[in-house]
Image (cartoon, rainbow, N blue to C red):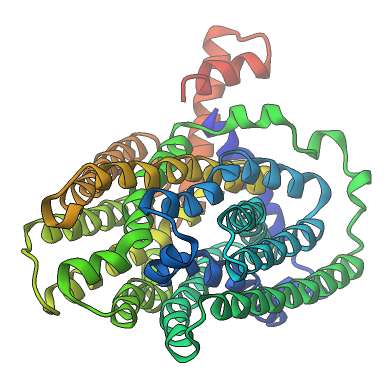
Length: 483
């Protein structure tokens, strides 16, 4: 099944490459303006995602909540995204990316507005509702962002473009951890920083409206058919999920393990640095921002390098190893007063995050049919958030029942174990990919896909000649059914 999906995706991408149209704005430098706007499409959602973490101590005091209830501010974000990104991606494939941009940008801004209002009046239920509304749009907006970038970029440029998205998103997270504690110190108000986040979300919505206008202009110039006029054979169906092969599902599994390690740590890192290593709230926020700063710098670089040399899965193994090493080092380090060790460990975590983030998402378009890209991005986000909906609660429960290292030893052990599972998963993907054409490890995945397609066609012809298969469908099942 995976081979069939790869073959169809390759045919579609080759057709795009061969049909160059000088009027196509996506073939000109104008696409870099779209990339810039697309990068800031999710700037607001990434800026506000970790608002609670940057203000954790004061937020817990204002809302009178414990660590488990605080973790629920993240879990309630993740709960809707166990399902919604998949349906969001499916919706984008059916109704179009422009509709998705408008809907999901608006939902993100609304959610942050409700959250800020809830904190302002010190109502935990309303604040929780705001985070849930935010969650209903944020991950689907990320799917929409990846889809619009995939529409305007192709080939090797796609990895670079997706890495730039991650780079700007990490900058938003850095700004959050730097700006929010500063606003708190200057004003003494937790809610002020949250309303600033609401304003940033409105800025992202403005970028979305600009993209909608430019994308509509491109389609009009090219004479792109209305989505209602698309032939039935080219429309996306739920049954297309069956074409998502083993490599895709293992990539999704790896996403769960590695991101649980990174994101769950960031959720409680502010208190962790303050209680174990004696840093102030603002200093802790700056240290946490190192992860995102390193990632913002290295993501485009590592993405470009991987595009040139390949070895994607090997790089993912290295990334998971860096993540695991970080938490092992934290476990082995005794409590101290403002030592430099935590800063060094955080840099290691940032390196692992940057390598992983710049590669993992760009693998997906090589593993599914071209028409299903948004659905595939949505499915992977849904699976990711299945893990992230459970992870913070597990960490909170472990913490509440632990005393060693201020209660953080066993939560850190859990995160190290998740990273180790990520290593095992990527090793599995590595050997599977080698056995099945080496697409992900190739320096030119498109060429590897083409060679694999030709090899399968040759084998198909041989099977057909010698076994007399009755139909092309029978032949496909014979060759691809188990893969």
